[in-house]
Amino acid sequence: MSRVCAVTGKKALSGNKRSHSLQATRRKWNVNLQKVNVVVDGKPQRIRISARALKTLKAQQAN
Image (tube, rainbow, N blue to C red; front, side, top):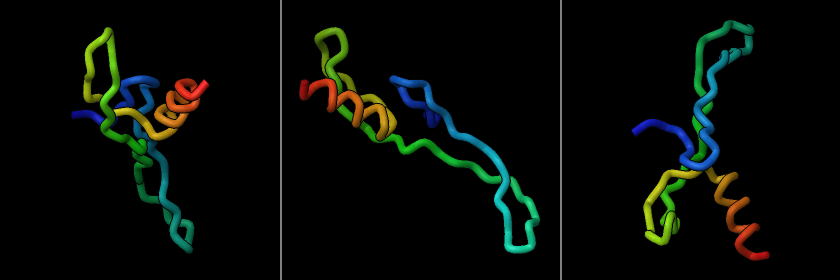
């Protein structure tokens, strides 16, 4: 299963880790994915969604 948000399509970002001597080695920033039960087309489905998208959906649900 890939590390991609089912709602926003966010993926892991890559870049450099910098040591104290500024030596560069490759690293990854993974997405904060959560498994959530969401109703899609009237049926509950378990999807992997980023924490930011989950916060947005909960805020929309409250209003």
